[in-house]
Image (cartoon, rainbow, N blue to C red):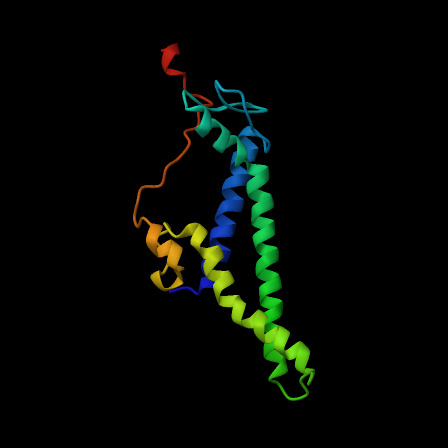
Length: 161
């Protein structure tokens, strides 16, 4: 079993890889044109509800890559706070009570931060039940099939035979 940190790191790497592949195939900035979702190199999807089109376009590869970078930054900040808190317990620690209290609070926030981030992938088979927050426990759907936006690069539209 992996740790929650490993789980998050692996999911971020997967998201980054998938976004990179999608960007390579269709460009990294997608837009809705209401006949489907268009990238600079062709249509990504068609025959969809406009809300679905907007959603797909809003989660183009560029946004996914920005989100991966932001979550990695959050993890780094949380890990730094946890490391600083642990340093207070070592011989020659800071001795600064105000800083100790701040770091202690940051350390106690570390676990809930990780759980909140991991909740993004609560439908992944490697997600552990003990990582679920109360909201995730209420809403998680285990083992559901993963939906995919089909690649229409070489697929004719239904009305084109």
